[in-house]
Image (cartoon, rainbow, N blue to C red):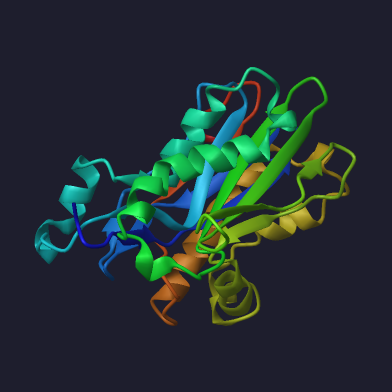
Length: 271
């Protein structure tokens, strides 16, 4: 067993509620050992209808100590990580019998702990002990009966008596009558400082203004949301060439709608 596990991290995700579901866009770059690996799909779709999972911060952990730089990305793509918080969360959701709105945080904690306990006991995660908010797990869903989107966030802290704590944040609910909203995750501080209020504003094409001018979520279409979320990530990617972010941003973009017909979208084909 390896002496330690190293994280692959770095994500920018944008969620925008619409009148037909929750639109989520994510970049496709992960950064293990400071190396950019592109083409990673970060929006995970469980079997449970109308749901999605994504992870920001440290998403996976692997032993990469013996892998040369030139082979690192290929090895990570082809070898399942020993610790994969997204995989564990999707597996947990797919075992649920009750609606996601009544998800049991303690049971999710136990499922995540089961994923990492062998490596905590073995000392491979010792370097993370005492650190808080190293990972954020996000579970999103859309209820077609109520036309409401829900977003749960859970912070993973390597603290506490078991050396792992899952800290839930209040569930956010978005209804058709609510004001439009654009919700960033991951490198959201970088997005705010350097894109929305910094040099990266030059790369914005006005699509976020289209949403902000709506009076309610009922007026926001899937196309509006996909255009805006993709442009925000594109702008952050271009800004990253000018001002280095804490972790990599780029590597392509995925856009998905979580709703009655959950699927990945092709933004340029939306009407």
